[in-house]
Length: 182
Image 1 (cartoon, rainbow, N blue to C red):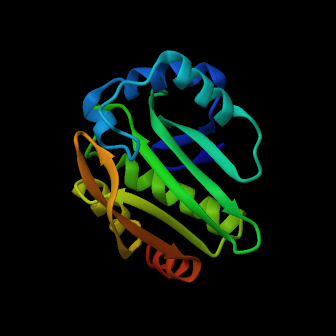
Image 2: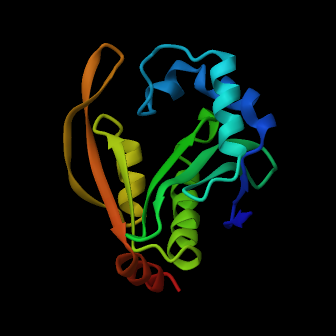
């Protein structure tokens, strides 16, 4: 388990599938995800994906985000963890729209980056984000991510192609930023 001021990140368990399905079935939430094509996922697909996330995998860690009152609000992960190059891809989504804009994503990002750089000793964490998701981009920039480039027409969703922005943060950048807050 990982802890922030207002959140706890606990490993995904198989029983999380129903809540994940509820979130993913919401078209507003689904639209914010890179896989959000507007096409609904079946319960079986979500159950199987959640089951796989709950398994031990040295190349990935998956967490359910729990806020201070014990309510699950989303999911975060580090995946494609590369042990030699010491980098990983970061992902996060807040499924509970009632807490959007309250800083939870920024806090979770900070907790995961601390885990990535301090405990996993990674050198770089990177992500991709849809260019039409300014809230997520702002959250990543607040956490210290920098824009590396644009993947043009990278994903087809909701009837159109959408650019994705590639962003990353290096360990020394994170450490410099985290020292500013101490």
